[in-house]
Length: 232
Picture 1 (cartoon, rainbow, N blue to C red):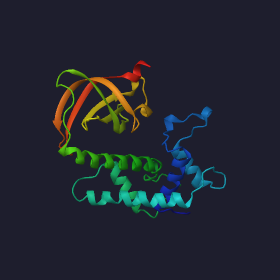
Picture 2: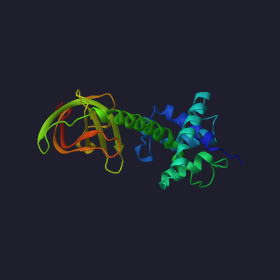
Picture 3: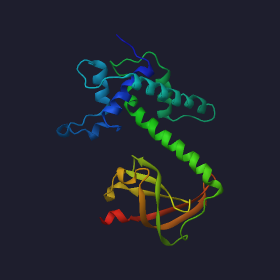
Picture 4: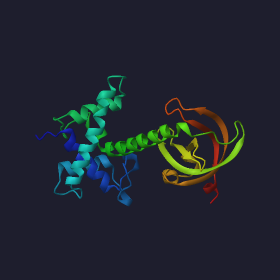
């Protein structure tokens, strides 16, 4: 029975991620009529039957897998200062492994297909965190506290919150100020409407204006958001 290293398994996940157009498809998002299969099933198929699978692992995929492993190895150092989450613990176990079996019920396997997506989201978050820290000297507040105001700006960070099916969005205004809000996707818009680089115009109630404990930059938090594109 062939055993795989964490890097080898992740290279298959990277190949699947490319095949899926950069999207991690979960089991409940499968649509047979549209030819949409889950990333996990495609990954297992490529490993079990490479000659029959449309997915082929390239040298570029292997290199990206090594980058992902290098990045998540940083979690080992985080463990020195705080307790890792269950998900983080599974990642650290996976990337160090050299005995992964695709037969049976290896508990490290289920997270593999999601790692390219997690990695990309983390890189975005890291980039935005650095930008926030740069804004600490210049950022100010937007709108008037406890009043409804109109805002405009560029989406510089957006994160999908699976538990609530909502987006956490950070907008950078023309004045170089940060406005953040949560948006419930059940209202009709989708993740792509909040893609980074998107220009948004919206009205919202100014709930809080405070200095971030993390970035030390001034931030404006709003709710009851109404976007102009909702009327289209």
